[in-house]
Length: 416
Image (cartoon, rainbow, N blue to C red; front, side, top):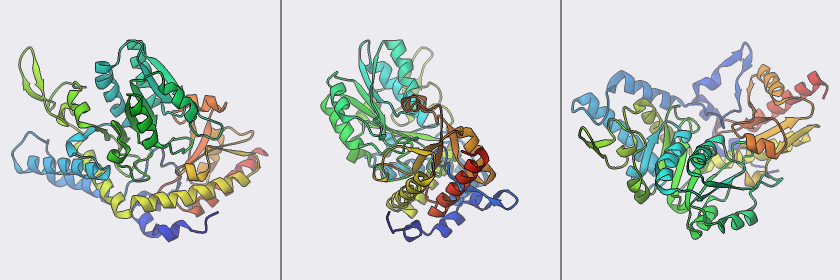
């Protein structure tokens, strides 16, 4: 067990003060202990404030007006695009496309790039640990185009089987799409190596970075990712905004996903000319305040430091695995702490995950119970559901201690 504690990495008292919701009590005398950041992260005051300022001071539509408010709104919106491009090391802000969320970003690639490039018999490689958002869009396209879906297995330790991956690459896939970090197991996959292997086989790659971008540095150029997708609400930003990064040539060759305002350069009665990227993929009035809020979230995370956040989460998850494993009847799923991010999914013998979560809630501890939009992965482990505790920059080892104390209360209630 590492001797380094999160307080030695980050000033937790200061960070918690930045998140208004963490000061509330869910019931009189019961403070909230938020361990559900994998589902959605809490929002710091600077994100809330910039969105409030936009509505109070600069509310206008973007890219269309020449009055002061419109120009201010457009500048705020496009400055956020530049922030996010810098954050993920994109070569150009034009390669950052705003969507509603990770799910829409993947659907955009499937419906635009996929329909233009995939034909009957073509192979797509996915993994058994994918979120439904990186399964269902490809299943839909496979049914439409008679595509062949293949899956990299997950072993008993929650790691991908690379021998099988090498074998699957011999099928000459057109696309390899995978999560950089599992939302259930916390497994951090070696994305750069997986992309390198895929490229050697002639495949395009898509990285689901919904769980990685919020928690540790992600450099799209270093990864050499063709597409990379993530959501604002999992990285201290608002809901309703996501990002698609793509290599410039791919984005320029792809047809528009949605039709309407702002994605056009010229419209005639019987034809249209699409706009250049990124606007080609941003039809209609976007989530302006949300994009501005996401830009502020990026500023906040950069100020705190992604390396420090990752180091803190490593300490916490290492401690959590140790403490949870001490509880009789608890099974923790996934790899060792060195191979995972801040997620611990577990089950308690004889008690359904939903019952565990409900009792934990009585102690003010917010966790998630269910299949976490990863039903095939739960089928793989032959479990109907799991309880998931997930950690972020505002959590500490003391939160883990309270979680474990509450699990003992569950055991006492159910006599498990």
